[in-house]
Length: 329
Ligand code: UDP
Image (cartoon, rainbow, N blue to C red):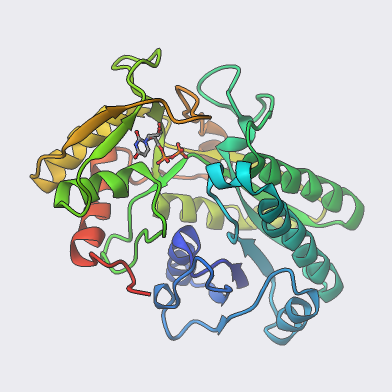
């Protein structure tokens, strides 16, 4: 398959490009490098610095490269910022995706893989989170992702598109060979921040809330390795052969880990002490989020390689240890 990877220079997109190559597909990357890193994409992968919202440019690119399918990872993903600047999130995450889908239809490309999020569920009504739970996002970021999910259903019904949408839990880790990994600016995710506190790049890690109704009082999350996410996407390709069909999958390991457990695991992996500060709860954090991924396992034959969070942190540690400045861009 010739696959256009939108946001292929970002964290999850760049790992997916690698996995596509490993599976014998031909990725082409489009990324405007607002958050992506040119160095995250190998020089042998065709690269276009363009905006998804530029319909004419995208349509021309889809035709010129004779693309079979589009995978879309390009989105803004700072929850707090989405609350204060929703305009930016609707424009980038929703409107630009609509333009991309229009370009696809006009170029005759009808297969789409979408990166959605467990944030579409908001505060879940039960745990673990299955695909059929009610979706009620509690911030504009989650809402824009849910809006695209609904857009896809309509396009699938009306125009015969086929799609798979994946709701990620907490993407974590780095490529096994340590050459690409997570590099966000600003970084807000727990694992890279705890690693920074272990190495002294930051003074400490703030634990956001210690009075949650969880076993140790800190939030539970489901950390899933970025390469496991990527492999699930590729496993869905055969489903896209059927026109007019859409599929949703929750992707996590199903094992929740608390903030304190992550800190202990980082100390164990790095051999360094992590200074901690107990802080107030962060607004909008549900106490507990973890996936029931049995649908992906059953229907896609998805195999989770990194079932243990320590193994995930080992890959993250290798990347951050050897690339203290990330991609340096
Ligand atoms: N967290 C924390 N300190 C930090 C960053 C995150 O205690 O400096 C907690 C956060 O409250 C949440 C968990 O770590 O319970 C995972 O947060 P992250 O931002 O990595 O992902 P999210 O679950 O928000 O998508």
